[in-house]
Image: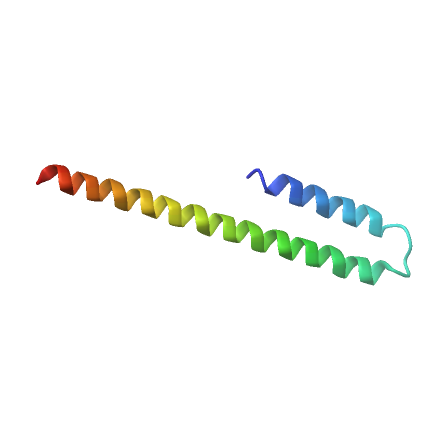
Length: 70
């Protein structure tokens, strides 16, 4: 969640900057799209990392419960 706001702000700034000169509009649009894709990839990787971390914690808790039952 903390990463989403900076990504959105960066995208908005890039879109506002693209409003000026129409000659470079296509290049700026591609640049904005590239930035958005990179942000989405980073966010996806972060979410996958968080999911793996949660799975590891759950596994450790299960192992501890099993060990305490013995």
